[in-house]
Image (cartoon, rainbow, N blue to C red; front, side, top):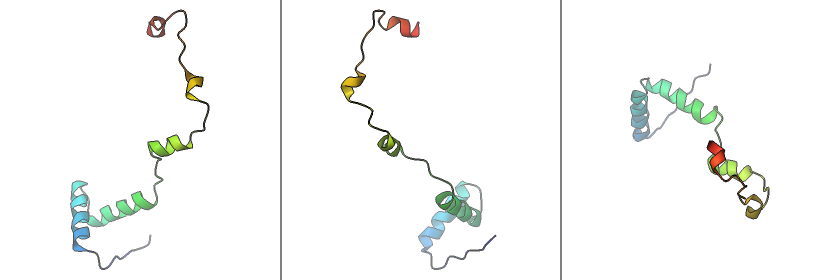
Length: 78
């Protein structure tokens, strides 16, 4: 494992790291490792908007118009 030294941090960043670490019940160093892992290593999921943007165009709205059948909607859940 490698070591990392971070110098010249704003005290507000250090305080925020310590507060976050306390909320998670771990040391500031462990919290720092967790943050780096979360932000740099773990793959991020796509947002809902990103998923929608990747969906292919499959037709026009009128192509998906709902047509009532002879049974109506009563048989769907009954």
